Image 1 (spheres, helix red, strand yellow):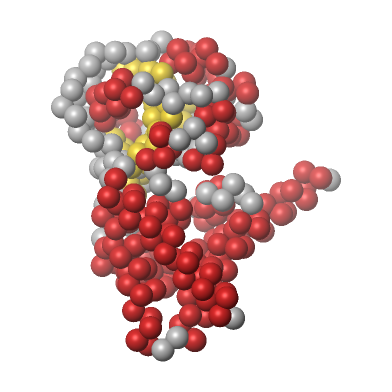
Image 2: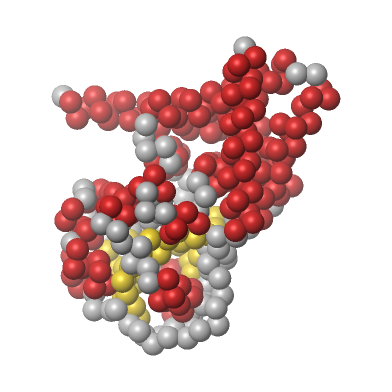
Length: 320
């Protein structure tokens, strides 16, 4: 038991260290004050027939950037067709449920030009409406910023640091089309982890940054989708998910039951500080994040187990 408690505490310190690195390195898309005129093709991806991109289109029209073309990709169409229609120097994929703020496109172009990036992915901030959304949506940020130093996505060529967010992805058009990435990965994974990993393998430069209020995501609650997205953070590896749940959720319970109250200051303090730092990075309320942390961990357990169950059932159907 003592070995397990030590493992829990070591993992907690490691996760805190990653969060601290992210907090200090501040991996957000900045406002650079530069203006460009390159043509940008914006491909709006609709995930189902009920998606309404009108709010996103309105926010695009309100941008301080006029040289854009908008292509709406319906959920029944392939990304290959939308890319073939594009004529811009850059391709910006946006989920139909996102809303963008002024300055986004200029700042994306500046970042890509300065660091010669082939792909810049932005993690949108979440619009949290209601208790359920506050219990569920912050979990993705919690897992990501606890496990992955975002700055290393650009600085390292290792595929273990392949990360992206499909809601907002900015590509060099010539690089995207020349390498036919959409033909080298499954259509269901288009522009996702598969393409990012492939780009790193081929030595192309990629980066992922936090939205910093330039991109917001606002969609209807879909717990199955959230479960699948959380599972992707672990590469859909069942063993990795179970070990994570054991150390992150089961571990603190064991520590709580076995430690004297005075000895709980360290683990509780690290968890508290981690949630505060993540809240500031993702424009969330730190007080609410700390207050809801125990319930969110229960939701994390339920959603990851739900994702594993869906994966097992899906794998069984494919075998049949």
